[in-house]
Image 1 (tube, rainbow, N blue to C red):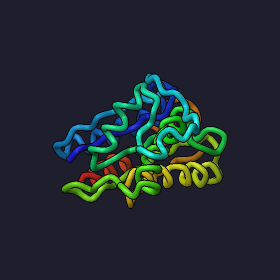
Image 2 (image 1 turned 120 degrees about the vertical axis):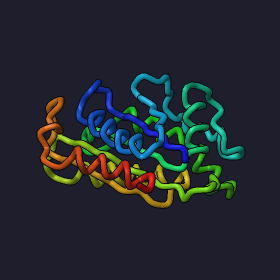
Image 3 (image 1 turned 30 degrees about the vertical axis):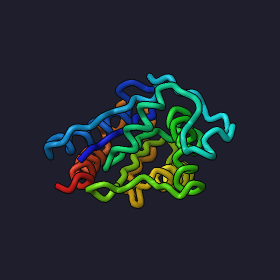
Image 4 (image 1 turned 90 degrees about the horizontal axis):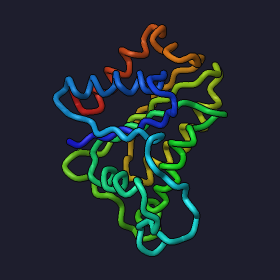
Length: 190
């Protein structure tokens, strides 16, 4: 089983990264490894809405997304971790998702969805936000759901933590680390 994770936070060792690392610890203790993409450190151009992928399902621009496309295509489990900024996913996360328009074209225009392979494809969405109300979670969830559907991940679990803003504040949350650890284990079936 191949597992990949997208870290969408620009803050090094921040709350999102802490949650993702604990999720990965659960997966690694189940005997699997995780390929992590730190989206803030990659060279990713935003989607140009040029239509270049309409007839082929392949983006005509080449940058670090080329490695991401291959990883998405060959993965069974996909984790998306993002802070909530202005009631949505981070810009780093959204750039990567927007560039998956080529998968949308491949699946819906060309009728060639990504095959499930030997395992049913599943996803996990981790969200952390400073505001206490759930508007940001709902907006971020909508984008993430469209992403997961476009890359042929029919089901995903969402864990969100609100009222968490200062760096490292998630460590004071009573249940978050245990929840994401267990979500990692559950994601890979153990």
